[in-house]
Image 1: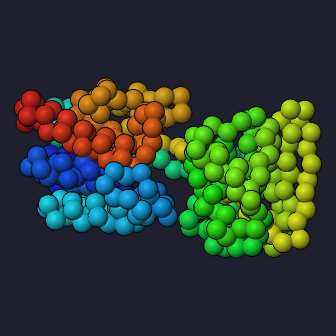
Image 2: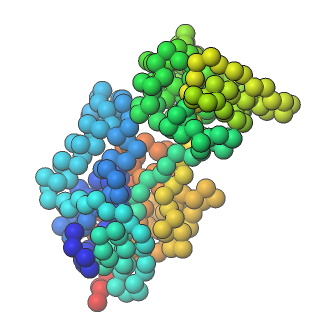
Image 3: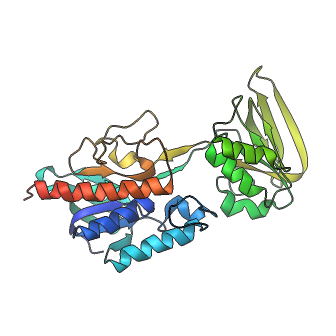
Length: 314
């Protein structure tokens, strides 16, 4: 990608939403580029099993993304690795997107940058990342073969990841701060039926410690506020699944967001700034799944094509 490029559309993010947008932009004959700062696929490539993407049963995140990426490239879509540093309105001329590879003048932007794992905030969380604390069961589960593992969270992601960890760990304890799980009942029943799992309700982890990994975990009783510290002979794992933080910082001045930072759009994926669209997990949506992100991307690209057809640029 050359510096000072001019495009019809810049798609920011190479996950399911971004790749779907790239496919539909290419079909609409838009001069578009899709930018991804690390590796195409985002969080999806860390998913070991995908069983709910229609028409593609029993696959994994990496394989599904590779199929999407290959399809986009086969159609002629331009995919590029670059970090986006700024998105600036350029009046009637659209936007200027600043990247690590140079500025891009573009008539429209689709933000499909996704979201990253939210941290739980207990003492020692940052210090033990990569040596006891993890946010990805697929990435790190194998390191806890035969060990005890604590999973923080009570939603679908926490339960799904906990079930995946039963392949490796000796025992999985789900630590839920409320008196119930928020996960779908089918997942809850599957979790409760597994002999390697248990749940601690109304409980939070407040501190982890240890010299060779995590060998001390402090728990707080959320009913009475009391704390107890448990010691383990063998280092344990603490996996955190308490939601996600949207990558919406670059557009906070251009869009409306929810209190947690997710971008508000209308049904066409349009934000309050003309020519700026959002798709996928970065968007305020009731369901964050791969198929939903892909749908968002298709709608956003189609809406962009309609927008460009209705506007005259200098």
